[in-house]
Length: 635
Image (cartoon, rainbow, N blue to C red):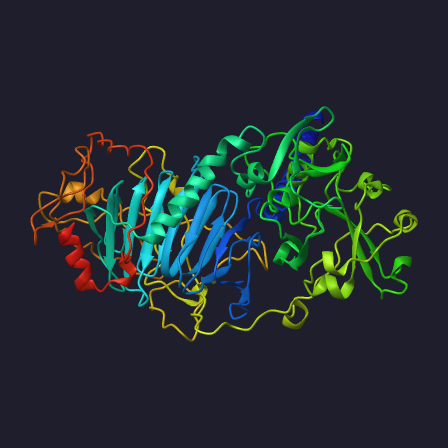
């Protein structure tokens, strides 16, 4: 009898264990899904800034590419933004790990800008890029209509694209790049340039020698600006904090026992207060974002906390963080339709107060995980173990009692981007105590009338996001240098089709990701090395050659042989250079290090040298093909 019951008991126990196991798996899956969902909710922690402007600069977000609007210093820049510089203008974008400089008539699209990736599409014009930080896991690249430039080392680079979008000229002053075309990958070293011609080129022509023009001289001056100020702030804040380079010129650092390092702005009025000399804009998913008029007014309003110490306002950067988290504004909101101060002004009235040391920042866009919460608050003495996102807001803010601590404007002025200083609503001290605390920021309507968006400027080109590149390229399986950005961080640039372009049948038509309207998805290229037999003695080496793959709809194409033309040079190329050189008309395969042999290390560039102005010099993007060939022979 006992034995007859054992199978039944065993089956019951097995069924119970199976149900328990299923329950554990379900809980684990739910927890994993929740963790992934929280991670996907976080907006990028890095946002660029317009750091320098001369002439006209216009911006159009990707979801409204025809809504060109003039922008100036301190305007934020993120993924999806189109930028166009007028014919006589110049502009600089600081993205933390470096700077991008634009010459007149440059038309670009910021394809991707987040914590680890920076991608730029140059539809037309001249772009100089200084990359200062390229850590493992970072990826920086520049797309053009007929090529892709993968930056594999910190350095100084220039990319020119002709107005007809059929010629790309790449210059490497410092660093190293890989130029990707349909025929393969070619390495360009310091002191070299590469030319890519045609709408669907198979190779790039690499040669020694580079030129200099006035745009290079201006870029060199801007480089000296950052280099000269690096020692003035590097011990207080991270060099990757956007806008930090201006702090030493416009303020003074001091040590305060309670707050640590404190920065005080110089030459401000006696009644000056933070978040008052500027205006508010609607910055996509982030919502209301502060734009300050002061030349130094970026870092202190998007990082840290403000305190009133020593009878003046000071900014606290907090604990040193290598990559601090960007915020649209670090304030708490008060007011609304029921605020008594609205009487005589017109309801509603909105007010804000700068967050003080130890006060938590609550992202009002509602998309911040616990890791995001920690990064926003832990460096500023907020006890994140006690103060959680679900905790009620403080009943009192320390800066309410500071002179100018509360700033308020009418709803009409807030929505219309009017200067705050000129539209202040005076708030009596007794009204501050009764001010209702708002749980989120007020809304800014996104229509053109409320934001006073300018119409498309005369002679402005179509936004760069409306152009389709010749092919959607992917990174090679590996980079030739050990510290290059890993291939898994690469991404393929795809853009929507518009009536102005006729895409190839083999192009990917997936829309690009934009941070303004929605959280971006991870974009990673699928790597596939070429395995093609060449039918000659080089078959083994050719089978190991990295290739450029089209999108999933494309068909495999045989890799053509690469033609390189040697140019007369005034000096010998670097001894360690491994690029193939030949007589004119000679045909060779692109160089790949044979199996089992270590790749020679290219010669390192020397100390950074800044180019000087040469009057009358034209860039490669402005010279006809015949004149360009003559200039090459002249060099």
